[in-house]
Image (cartoon, rainbow, N blue to C red; front, side, top):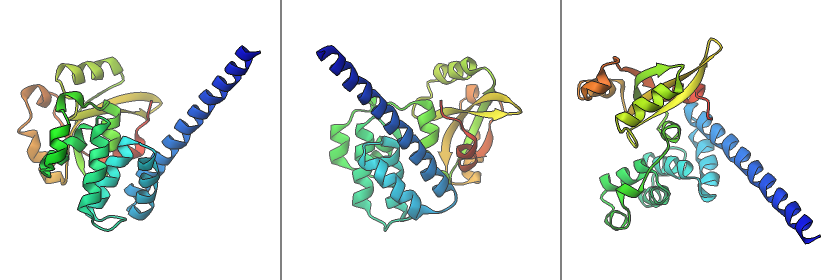
Amino acid sequence: MQVKRWLKIHVIAVLFSLFSITISFASTLQALDAQARGDFKTAANLWQQLANDGDAIAQYNLALLYKQGEGVNVDENMSNYWLTMAARQGMVQAYQRLNTNSVQATRQKLSITALSVGPQQWVSSQNPRHYTLQLASSTNKQLIEKYYSLNDLSGQAGYYSSMRQGERWYALVYGSYDSVHSAKSAIADLPQDLRKWSPWVRNIRSIHKIMITD
């Protein structure tokens, strides 16, 4: 009898967890869509809810909104707070921004070697108003994963998937730049191994609209 009760409780807990993940993913898509449309107030409200629940991507994006004063009032302290929360969960971009902002206390507490973020998470977390460099695309996911790993691109790049003419494609993108000009200028500074497939500039907002999350 006790085993049956435990199994029932366990199943309910698993179902609740799956339901929570589904709700969180839906809210993330809504926030990205609102931000892409320039509705920063709605995006800020959605990111805030997710950030309060411990979502590192939401914490990072909310920090950027506070930094830029989009959808919320400019608040450097709140921006640094949410960057710290995201960095503690392993988001490299948050750690790097904290270093750029010279937040000494945070710098002392965090270790760059302990931080990592998945390649698809990296793409999702980038500012939709920025631009990136698409390095390669293929229907072979393993090829893109191998290219990502061999070039040690963790924290600097990511890959995403999308549907094209009924086929699933995977694309590797590198960097986040605030203008088309800065993105194009960055191509010349890439290592030869990253330039061999003729990188081209992509708007991150357009990627967010078509990407499929596994």
